[in-house]
Image 1 (cartoon, rainbow, N blue to C red):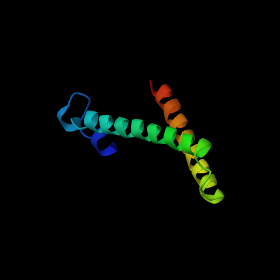
Image 2: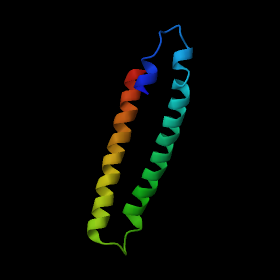
Image 3: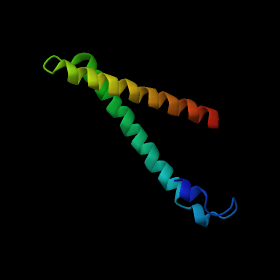
Image 4: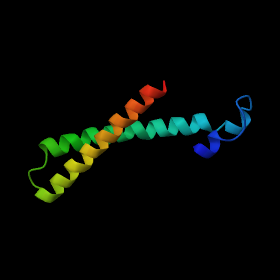
Amino acid sequence: MCDSNFQGTIKEFGARRLVPKILYVKFLFFVLEVGWLFLGSYWSADQYEYCDAILVNTVRLLVGLAWVGVIVFIVMMGKAL
């Protein structure tokens, strides 16, 4: 991504022609990650009766950290606009 952004100048669109496609792919992965987070949040809140406590606590920790990452991403995008 950075390599594509640093090529060319503002008026040279050909050097950075892949940037919009890369951003669309990145946005698609972001949407998939948020969906996966909703699933992980649901599982760790409701569907954990038959699992080991260490596994459940690890999943809860990872889901919580991922939500922090999503919130930081959204805040950073708000500042960039």
